[in-house]
Image (cartoon, rainbow, N blue to C red; front, side, top):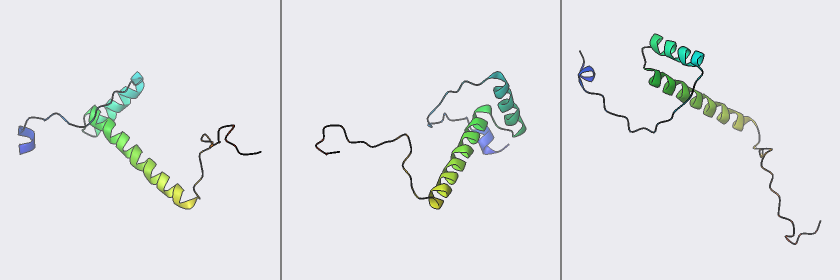
Length: 86
């Protein structure tokens, strides 16, 4: 046995989240965790971490290829009556 197996587990100081999953997704997560010798919580954290890292990588790549554009949902308009003639 290694020292890490003998030491009691310390509670994590990391932030927590809660998710609600359909039963078939939960079963798939449990199966994946078992196959990878992880806890379900650790497997979920790893999947989320990989997704965030991939999203950041994709975002950095797409930003370097294209000129920055303002999202279509954000329109900057001056309020009416600000003194500018039309």
